[in-house]
Length: 183
Image (cartoon, rainbow, N blue to C red; front, top):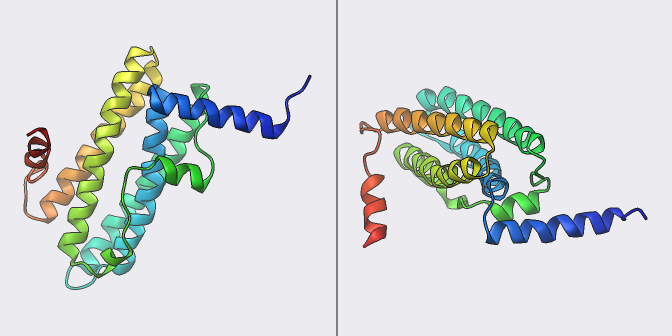
């Protein structure tokens, strides 16, 4: 007997909830996919609303970040399918699993504050990437682990370059905040 489309989707949603409560590499990677979708919107917000003397300097930088974001989103969705996983495919699902925070008021921030927000987002994304790498290795998913390691490296590069724009070293202000969380 064939299962209805609605029943197949209901089973997918049920399995997704189970996987997110007992994380799997696929579920954790879906968080990364979701973060990429929200990051796309946030990168556009910066590109559209940055003002002041840094406007012309940041326009090509944020266009490059947007292009890279689109590439990563497409690659990661395809990789999840390659791994026989089900990437989130609706805005509602992607929004539900993203851990990045949006704020329409950010458009009024200074260029430096906008860049600092992007840095923080990449750093937040890396928390999920690190967890997904460990899960992929544990689950013997070498292709997924390799992609995630390369993505982590890309995020590190973006953090370093954006920090340089602010006149800071790669990890300035990031590791100290992490240490505070442990106390």
